[in-house]
Each structure stands twice: as C-alpha cells, then as structure tokens.
Picture 1: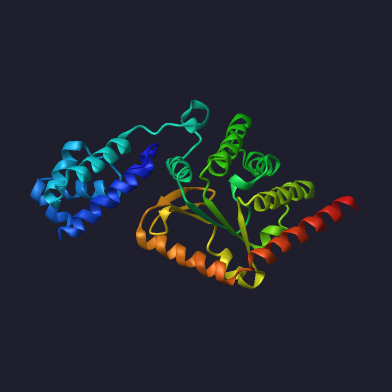
Picture 2 (picture 1 turned 135 degrees about the vertical axis):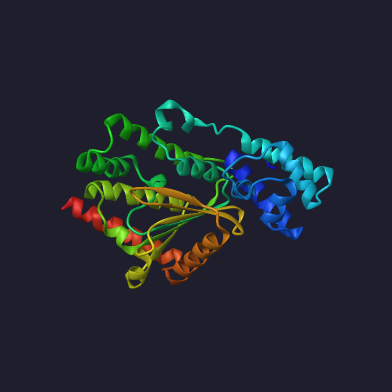
Length: 298
C-alpha cells in the first residue's frame, strides 16, 4: 500500500485482490459463502466493494484462500483498515458535501492518485479544464433556465471545479492527461465569444505547459463519437487497474467492471487512432483562437 492512499483506492485494490485470491484457489463465491456460513450476498458485496470487510472476516477469507504469508496478510489487513476509514478531504466540508454525489466524491479520490487520465469530450470541455467564466456560464444555464440551484450552490460548485483542477495538475506527480474532443467543441461558444476565446487560450496554455495532450476528433468521425457521450478513464497505475466515470445531467456513476472499463479503453484507442495528431490538433485550436480574436476585434 502506498502511504496516503484514499479509502476509495484502498477499497478497490482490496476487492481486486480478494477476487484474484479466490479465483486462484478455484473457489466460487458460493463455495466461500457455504464454507464460512455466510450469505452469498455478503461475499458478493465484499468483492464488489459495496461494504467494508472487518479484519476478522478478512482473516477468515484469506485462510480459506490458503493465503498464509504474514507479509501478504498484513498488507491486506492494512488495505482493509484504510478502506474502512471515513472519507475526508476539503470536499467533505459542509459547504460542499450536500452538493456532491457519492460517485463524484470517489472520482476526486481517484483523480488524486491516477497516473493517466483519458477524457473524451463530445460537447463541451471537462469541468476541470474550464476557466471560471466558462464554468460560470455552464452553471448559470441551469440556474437561469431550470432554476435548479441557488447562487450559493453555484458558487460552491464552481469552487469544486477549480479545486479539482489543482488536485490533478498542481501536484508534483501529476498524471498524463489525454484530452480527445469532438471538432464541434471548438465551434461551440459557451457564454459568449469573449468567454470562448479566453477558454481556448487557457487550454492552449495548459498544452504548452505539458499538462494536457490534445487530440481533435474530425467531423468525419463525429457521428460515431458524439453518440458515445463524454466519459473519463482513470488509470491507477496501469490500464489494467482502471476505473470509468460517466456523467449525464441527471446522474453519474463510477464503473469498476473490468469488461466495461476495457471496452472504453478500446473505444478511446479507436478515437485516438482516427483523430488528428497532436500537432495538427494544436494548429486547429490556434486557428480557432485567431478566428475568435478577429471576430472580437471587428
């Protein structure tokens, strides 16, 4: 275990380890439940990460799996302790807690320890890359059009976006951030022409600083790409140890299922393969900035 691991990361690592140990022992979840006189649902919830596992139950599982190496047992027990720890951080304060979904709170823990983040944007840039004015325009739409959030809530949501940006890009071991955007994103003016200009200039600055790698998905692939919707893949050490985050205006979710995560990795690889290269993508962004600047000057 790495010092400073979050409960979400430890819980994920523990559930993967337990499933791997069970499969290595050639046992089904039903076999384990019967041997330990547990309900099948208890075993399933432990392996899915839905519930925490006590040290006593963990030792019983490891004994059943034939894991008797003291170092291995101690490491997994420490993982279990970390996983049971109450999630805490700046986002856990009363100003933010009621505004954040469980999936988003997990996402922020994974963002803080991801080694690579892949984001496909089908309509607008991700929140963590938005300027304050751009984010204000996005949040203002829901406030003005749907009357869904108060001014205080909008301010708190804006603060969350800005602090998430710091959590990813301002840490010493920041992750590789691969951003694939549909070409239409470059022509979508959120808020106003001036806001769009400042937003794209900000993105260009992040690219120049080596914080973001941009790939533009051409219009020719747009019909396929846009139907996917936006999604985020976070590698926690490798592509084999990764999670998927998907969000719509009504709900969001963290997906751990290996087959679904792998499928989205393959989709992202296809998107990259059919996108413009990094150099041409950068030139397209620069051309759009120049066009917006000319329109503003006129």
